[in-house]
Image (cartoon, rainbow, N blue to C red; front, side, top):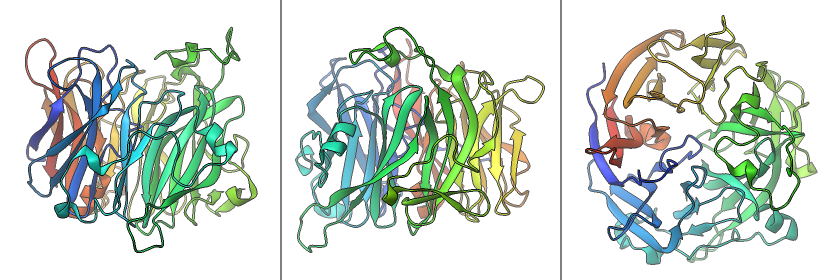
Length: 454
């Protein structure tokens, strides 16, 4: 069993709202370690008032430094919608910190820090003045095509790719959308000049559906990228093609998770330009040629799972040290019982699927996370769908990830998609979990970080 974690508090969670806004699986890097410092972003109120909310960005020097938090009071967040989360990315090439926030089919909202803030953290005073105001464009991208794409985005995410930083986002709506990919590169100038983004292309294109990715993982050198996803089929409804339509923004809108199907997989060996499928690595989309992965692309389907089988969108994935690919999701394909399942692509190209013990994987329940330790063991961080319980399972590399051990279970954590710091576990083999914790009566909660020494 794991020892109980140390717990630190980031700030108060806005539990007065109808929708949770801190802790969703698609916040890929809401907590991220770089250069011996850990960073976390979240929403909270300021000056004692419940509304509006403001972006809080915290940092601490590892292993045990206190959290320092700055608040961006120039941008009030007012929309009660769980999609409108905040996420961060750090570019190793120039030490810039990037934030994107408050989107559900909205124009880009983005800001970045000055050069060197993350590479020389001891030399800067941690204040909002380190950052730009909210921007509606990415540095270096101004073409009409990209400007139009950035006018209607959801699910932005940042992914470190070697010395660069990737930015992906969805356009369109639930069941009818595409995923796009940009890359930020530091300036070649030795001065403090900000770098620029390049639009790589539309790597995932829906056709009467949209892909919902479990994640986007890069190898340490940034050469290899891995992504897995489910498709959500579109169901037409009255007014679906009205530019002013907002029905699709409801938390359980006309195109809900019941329309999710299949688990798919693709990878790139050149940082996301050419995408491949299958054990032979056949190229199925070359972004330089304007191509995209589409639902009929050969070799992308790992598991054929029909609609209505309980598949979630955007649950979790991880890539182990041997380039094995792990996916966490759920289905009812074994005897009709809906269970959380571990889908695993071994290095020899074989996919397997196993139900997880000790936990339930109910339809609509909160999503879990996956992370790989120094030793190559796989950890599952799993919330309960109704009770304030958080569970951690381990599948060891020695067992070829075929055996699952209950290693920790704690109470006092309201149902939340936990988030994990994959960069920190590579730094010092500590599992940092970003989640919410009850603090008192009437469902008051804080945003917290749990640190497990593995």
